[in-house]
Length: 322
Length: 251
Image 1 (cartoon, rainbow over the protein chains, first blue to last red):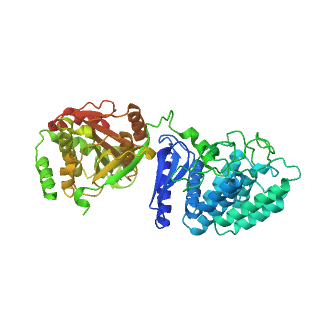
Image 2 (tube, chains in turn red, cyan):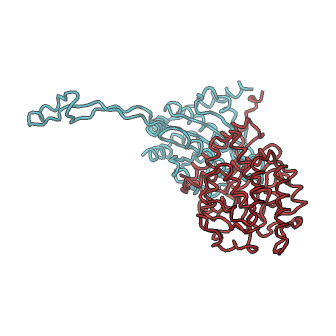
C-alpha cells in the first residue's frame, strides 16, 4: 500500500485501540520522524515513534502488519509492565538478567494484551511479527547461552498459542529442564515482579550449570552509562517509562542484529555468523531493530530531519473557550 | 465580540468583484456535481428512435435508444490559509481574508464539500519536529454564514513561523481521506520560508493521493508551485490568470 495510506491506517488503528482502552493514557500520539522505532512515555502520555516512511512509496502489506504488531507490543509494555522491579533487578544482577526478564516478559505482556481485548486482532499481529522475525533472521542455537533470552521470547510465545514457523529447540538445549521450568512459571505469572523473580532464579540455575567449565560469566553487574555494549539486549530505556521520557531505544539495542547475521528459518540454526556459542552478539529480544531494517527501503531519501511532519494542534477561537 | 467579526465578514462579502462570473463558471466546471443524464442510441431494444427510421429502411435493426445516467462527480475542497507572522507584512492577511471569503462563497454555490483551516507555528517541540497550530475555521458540513465570525476574525490571528511541510501534509491527508471523486487543496500563502525540497515532496504526495493542489500567492510570487498564480488585489481573483489556472486544472 501507499506509504501515506499505511501511515493513516496505523494511526487509525492505534486510535481505535486508544479508545478501546477507555483513555488509559492521557494521550496517544504517533510520530513519523523518529530515527528509530520506539515508544516514549511522558507522564500519562504515550508517543509512538516510527521511521519517516515516504508517503509516495509502496510499502508491502506485511510491513504494515509488522509495524502494527510492533506498536501494540510496545503499548503492551506501557499497559502491563511494571518498571520498578525490573530496573532494580538490572542494577543488582546485570544485563544478562535484564535480557532474561525481557525474554520472559514479552510473551506475558502479549498474552495480557490478547486477554484484555484492547486490540481484537492482537494475537494474529503478534504471531505475524514473530514469524517475520524468524523468517528474516532465523532462530538461534539451543546451546547458545547468550541467546537464551531470545529463545525464551520465542518459546514463551509458542506457549501463548502462536503458530510459529520454527519448531521448538528447547528439547535440544543443555538447560532444557531449567528453561522449561522458567517458561511454564512465566506463562502463569501475574506481573513483572514475578517475572523478575523467575529470571533471577533461572540465571542462578544457568550459572550453576555453567560452573564446571565456566566459559562465560553472564551475571556481570551492569556498568552504568555504557550504551552500546555489544549485543547485550534490554539496555536501560528499552522499556517504556524508564529514565523519564527517553525514547525506548538505546544504542545497545541496535547492535547484534545486523542484516546477514541470521539463520534461515526452518529449524536450521547456526549458519549465520555470530551465532556460535560464546562468541558474537546476542539477538535482541525486542523487535525494534527488525522494524527499522524492514522499513529502511521505504524511507524518504536523504532524510535530513528538516522535512518532518510535526504535530498538529487545533486551537479554538476566543469565544469557543466559554 | 462575535457581532463585530460577523459585521467584518459581511462588509468583505458585500464587496463586488467585477468579472467574477468567469471564475464562478470555471470553478463550477472544476467541481461539478450534477448527475449527467443522456441517451444512448443505436440500441437493439428500448425506446424507438424516430430519427433512426431512415436506417431502418436500409435494413438496420438497432434503431432504439436508452436513457443512461452517469454518477455525479463529487468534490471536496480544502482551503488552507497561511497566518504566519510574515502575512502581517503589507496587509497580506487582509487581502488573503478577502480572497478567502469570496472563494468560500463561490465554492458554496458549487455544492462541493468545503473546509477551511488556517495555520501557523505552534510552540517548538524538539521531539516532534515542526509543529503546527491549526484553526478550524469551517468544517466540511458547515455553511459559510454559520462561520462568518471566524472568517471575519482571521486577520487577528497572525504570528509565529510557517510550518509549511507539516501544515500542507496534514491538509493533504485530510482532503485525501474524503470519499469524493475529486479532491482539491487551495493554499493561500505568501510562501515566505517555504522549503523547496518540501514543495517538491508535497506536490509528489498530492499527485500520488489524487489531490489537485492550487496555490494562490498573496502579494508574492509562488511560482515554486506547479499550479499557482499571484493575487495582489481582490479584483485579481477575477483575473484571467486565476480563471486560466482553474480552467487548466479542470482539464
